[in-house]
Image (tube, rainbow, N blue to C red; front, side):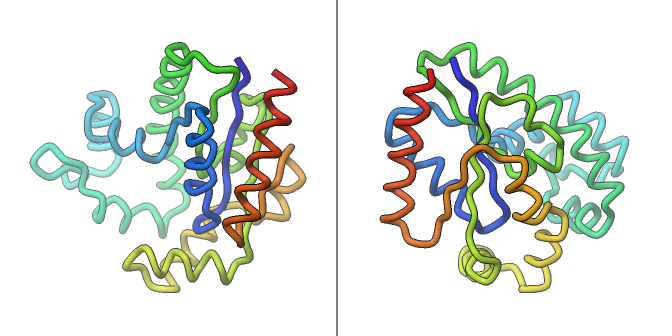
Length: 194
């Protein structure tokens, strides 16, 4: 079974592209959703986050997302420590999930693939791109974020120019019909390689 990494900067539309692959019958592991689940349900993560950020990291046993965001998005070192707690647990969860799949290939959708130097873990990496202003507009439309908050989150991610040098496949996601066409071509190409 081939293991494909799917990544892209905030607002690039990687979840939209992941959904297109999923509609083609490809099992897709959503790292962000699983991380949220595991941060609320893994005892190991609970203990380590409380140790790192204090009791306020959880309220009534549930992750205090706004508190954690206020701490880590302005402190890159703290963000790295948080990722160092969460990412290994998510990685093991993905490996376990992969063993349950019956498909020529699976996709792991993950925002910080290159930032975590994880590209070596995949047979191929798909990068979803879109112009910066398009990405910002998308995030402002879907979240209640300010432009400043979106740009701060972008600054914690590598720029597309750097990612392009490290990736195998690029899907530009501006026009949905063109994106769907590209996904179909990529799907056929990966199946041919399996």
